[in-house]
Structures are given as structure tokens and as C-alpha cells.
Length: 441
Ligand SMILES: NC(=O)c1ccc[n+]([C@@H]2O[C@H](COP(=O)([O-])OP(=O)(O)OC[C@H]3O[C@@H](n4cnc5c(N)ncnc54)[C@H](O)[C@@H]3O)[C@@H](O)[C@H]2O)c1
Image (cartoon, rainbow, N blue to C red; front, side, top):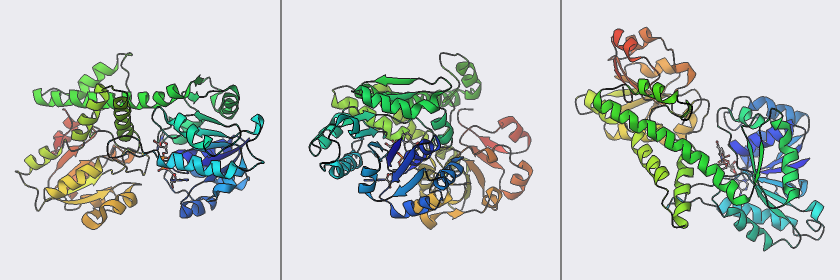
């Protein structure tokens, strides 16, 4: 099948490359010329394990190409996957500008007499972006104002996770398709069927249910994280250990083990904006989405939860102190720093007078673009520690899990560890002479 993918960020690029890998002819469009140039040359613009291989192979074999030309994307196929940003407006609602503009531009190129005139060749706009309930209808309205012939708008929310995006796309838990007609369902079924051989269901539903399904999933994940973080606060207040409480809680299969890890909160391009959009969207229908609203409030405070402990440890002031920070990306195995806890921690520490030296395996460039030279960037994890007064872990990359503690102790001015993800063993560190601070332990 011929497919056009509009927007080649984390979602569009993975979707485009994976659709090409299953034999489709894919044209990916982006308005970012530099990005398109690099991708056309087989160079990745994001860090995503497994993706370079698929990208290069499919370009080489002629199934995957990139363009900035909307007309070319409009004419390449009749199926348009819109993988565009839906960032938050100031009131928390999703900004649908990119999605609507893109649909209008595509429709403009399809409005000619030879396109979209009969049912078999009717354009199908597929909303892969995370969009609030009612967006399908808005896109339909925007396209209808331009297109004379038949067309369809479907929702196909994406559930991939950065860091395991290729695997998630190739082996999804489920595929959600929100459609109003059988033809749209058949097209999407045909495209996804190769990825669902292991039995993942392709769930057909109406567009509104598909739109809510994505937010409902992310809202629930946010609630789980904030819930365990509030449990951690209680544990800390009474001198209990949240790690023991977590194990006892997570072993109940009704609760489950995932997304129940205390830490410095969630970030990224999805959970924070999707929780806000869900609350805002519900408000538009006269409803208060109290649980998700609370999760967001808990998370906002959680990102800087360790700062008071750091200030207290150093006698009430941080001027003249240097903190070494390990991990900047919003989670391991990605270079994405959007709404990352590090972006709350760094300004808080700088405001308190501290100097900061950071290391992250993939996200340094993205942080530098935001924070600039206000902090120092280390060559490797141990370089960050030299003459620092403490180590603070923010993102639990694998390579930080079993470090050389003797070397760390010899490099730090004081053997102090602030473990923002509870990945270290407090007893072991204390035996080695470290002062250890975690979350709720
Ligand atoms: N990143 C994730 O893990 C993830 C997972 C599931 C769903 N989503 C959702 O998917 C959508 C896209 O997210 P993302 O992380 O891929 O975003 P992104 O910011 O990484 O990528 C968006 C791309 O769209 C391009 N773009 C912007 N305006 C354009 C236009 N008018 N025409 C063509 N291209 C344009 C940008 O240049 C960029 O390359 C969002 O709604 C997001 O919530 C993201």
C-alpha cells in the first residue's frame, strides 16, 4: 500500500519506517527542511534504539522517502497519517493548529477534479496525534470546506513508548482504530495486520471512543505514578520504606508492577500534556476530572521533591556547592527532554546558589539548547563528579545502575547521594560510608 506520513517526529518517523518495513511504500513529510535532509541521507534526528537500521534499510530498498513538499505527499497516496504535535495551550487544552492546518493543506492539494471523486480513491485522513474528543469532527469539517468529493477521517492513536518505540510499534499490545465506515477500517486493518500476528487485537470503535481511549490510558498511568509518589511521601514522614510498600502493593495483580515506581515524577511529551488536555477536555463538557487533576498537581511538586533535602543537608544554603547530576532525559533510552524533571531540578538548584555539572548519555545536546552555559557538561559520568559535593541521580539509565562506588567516593568532595529514582541500595551505600537520600525511604 502507498502511505503518506505527515510529521516525522518520534511518532511519525517510527510509524513511517515500520510501515515501510512491512512492505508499504511510504513518503514521510515534514516542514523542517534540515530534518528531511538528514533523514533522506539515512541519518537519525532522534535517539531511538533499533530505528537507524530500519530507516537505512528501507531507504536503500526504495520503500521509504522524505519530503517537504505537501503536494507530493498528497499525491503519493490516499492515506495520510497525521503525526503532528498537539502541544498544550496556556489553559492546558491541546493546540490543534498543526493538525487542522495540515489537513487543510492536504485537502487543498486534493481538491482538483482528478482526486477524491469516487469512493475507492477517497482520501483517508488518519489522526495518529493524541487529540481530544471532538477533533475528528473538527478535521472532518475543515476538510469538507475544501474537498468536494467523499473522504474519511479516522483516529488511530499511538501507544508507543520512546526508548522502545520500534518494538512497541512492531509488537503492539493493541491497535485502536476509530472509524465511521467499513472501508477505513479495512485499510487500517490491512496496514496493521502484519504487526498483530501474535494476537494483538485491532479494536474497532467510533472516533470519539478512540480519542478518549488514548487519554484514558495516559491519565491512568499518571495517576499510578503520582499515587505511589504520595505513598512515598507518607513513608518518608513516618520513617517507613516505600520500596517495601511498593513490592507488597504491586504483587496484587489487580494493581500490577509497572508504573508504580516512586521518583521525581513523570515528564516527557505525553503524560504531562495529555493529563492537562484530559482535564481541560472534561471541563469543556462540564466535568471535573478530579483524579487526573490531582495526579498532575502531585507530579508538579514531585519533580523538585529532593531539593529541600539537598538544601538541608548542606546547612541551609547551596552557594559554593557543586552538584553532579546523572541523567537529564525524561526517562532512559531517549534523548527527549520535554517536561523532564531535570528541567525543574536544574533551575531550582541554580536559584539556590548551587553550581551544576551534568552527564546524560543522549540528552546533553537537547538540555544545552535550553539551559545553555549556566551549567557544565561532563564528558562521562565520572567526569561530572570531580570536585562535586554530591551526586544526584535524576534519570535511571542502565549505565548508572551499578557504578564504581569506590571511584565515586574518591572523586566527590563529600560522599553524598541523592537518588531521585530509588535505584541504589541505601544499606550498601551507607556501609560504604555514603550519606544516602532517596524518595520515601
Ligand atoms: N512522543 C511520543 O512518545 C508519543 C507517543 C504517542 C503519541 N504521541 C503523540 O503524537 C503526536 C506527535 O508527537 P511526536 O512526539 O512525534 O512530536 P514531535 O514534536 O517529535 O514531531 C512532530 C513533527 O511534526 C513536524 N511538523 C510540525 N508542523 C508540521 C506541519 N504543519 N506539517 C508537517 N510537519 C509538521 C515537526 O517538524 C516535527 O518533526 C503528538 O500528538 C503526541 O502527543 C507521542
